[in-house]
Length: 262
Image 1 (spheres, rainbow, N blue to C red):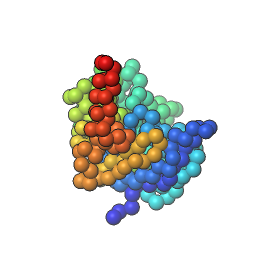
Image 2 (cartoon, rainbow, N blue to C red):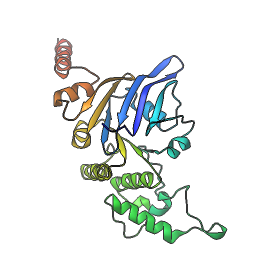
Image 3 (cartoon, rainbow, N blue to C red):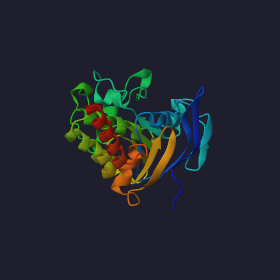
Image 4 (spheres, helix red, strand yellow):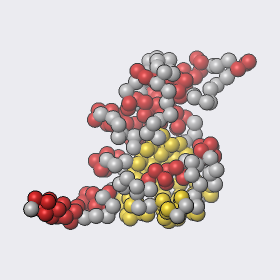
């Protein structure tokens, strides 16, 4: 089996006495979507912030292509090939597609002038590669749909060297049609074969549509993992619920309701 593009080994993150992550390990390979699942407070956000260089782990190791990495800042993680697309996207709706695409990394000519024609062409071409055709990349991002903005953020991360693409709840604030557009974009990126995708989601259906493998967190620990072929639907539901059996939970709720009606 090929070496994982990213290997996370026994990551622990403490905030004072609180243990947010407790020995989390994870492998993600190029050309696959790895769904990271769990309820609120499971540790998903903390883990991606560790990978993105926002937090430094208390202990544990991160390897990219077999090389151990030490991220002291988000820039360190970005330079190493970690591209993180957060829910807020870090996009300015008043600026154009091109200006958002190159925000902070503009191409400049003599005397600091912006090479707008070249940037417009690059932004157009890179968006087209993953399925969005903008005839006018100078249009304001505020005129775009939520799904198109997600695609812009993904295309930007890939163009600037992301080997590992972390998508934080990319479909959560979108309508059904836009959700499907984002999932299709993920599949186009996956088909390239050279990028590992970590897909953080609460949506069981979306994870089963696109993910090759799953890792489930609860209270900062891995409680289960496996490939799509390994896990039955009921097992995925149980693990997404933090390891609680849905049938047992339903019985407990029925009991509470019965007691409340007495």
